[in-house]
Image (cartoon, rainbow, N blue to C red):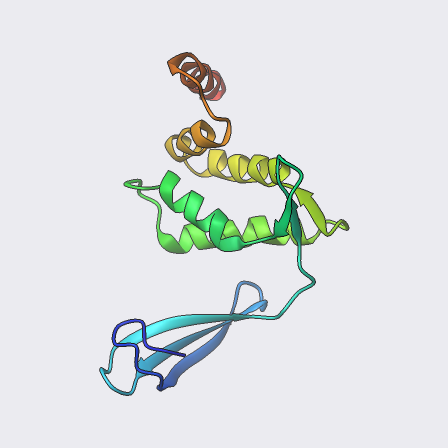
Length: 152
């Protein structure tokens, strides 16, 4: 594992523990050159999930794409990176529990929106505006009004 700070190829494992219900091994590492610490996560290899895009192309599932979308939606919101990672873990776990190995991107998007709506309304609207491709302010306002109707 290369150090993300100095790119040195050698490090030592300082701490190792099971994480995310035993499905992931979290390791704290220390670079042998610069001495800085960083975290890595190890996951077992799984049967690949394939995503069916709108144009019917198929591509391998990439959890990093979901995380990137969630990070953008949660930008400048009081949501920790750990919480965002947990959200992606929940989404991936739900997707992998399906019997089908091919899933429509629309199904994945709906699941992400549901999880974001439960987490933070602003992040939800941000994600929905990209996912649903709002054409104008009217589409945006309809979504916000829908949220407000459900608010206590």
